[in-house]
Image (tube, helix red, strand yellow):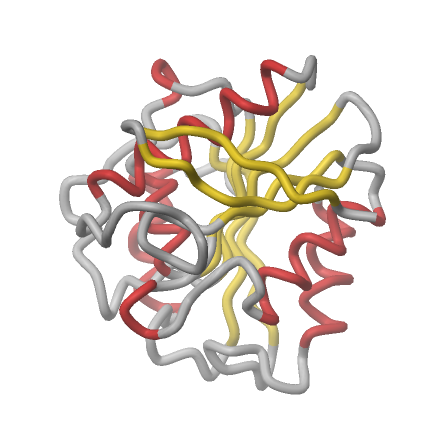
Length: 199
C-alpha cells in the first residue's frame, strides 16, 4: 500500500505517494505538466509497480503546480530541485541505494540533476523526449543505467537516442519495445517486464 506523504521544495509543499519496502529506493518523475502529466499517469504507475515488484521502496510525486502540490510550472528549473528534494526525502528515511527514474518530461528533468547535488546512484529514462525538448546542454550521465523507448515513439525516437547515448553513457543499456508509441498503449506489460529484467 502506498501512503500519502508531503515534502518541501523551495518552500512549496509537494504531494507524493510512498511505498515502503527494502533499503533500495526509487524516485519516479512524471510527464509534462502542461499536457496533463502527473504522478497518476499510466506509464508512471507501470514504472512504479515494476520497481515495487522488484522490492524497491518507491516515491512518486507531483511536481510544483501539479495536482495538490503548491507552486507553478517552472520550465524544468524548479522541477529539477523538486526531484532533488524527493531524492533527499528517501535518504532521510534511511534508503541506502537510490535510483532516479523518469518518463518523458520527467526523464528530461532528471537528466539535468547532477549526481553531486543528489544521492542517485542509478538513473533510468523511459522515453526521453529528444524530439520535443532541448537535451543540448546535457552531456555525460555516469549513473545512467537504462533507457527504454518504443519503436513507434515519435517524441522519443530510437535513432535520436542512439545518437545521444555515447555522449550520455556508452555503457547504458538501451531497450526498444517493438510497436510501442510514446504512451505505451497496449504495451504496459512489456514495459514492466523490460524494466524488471534490467533493474
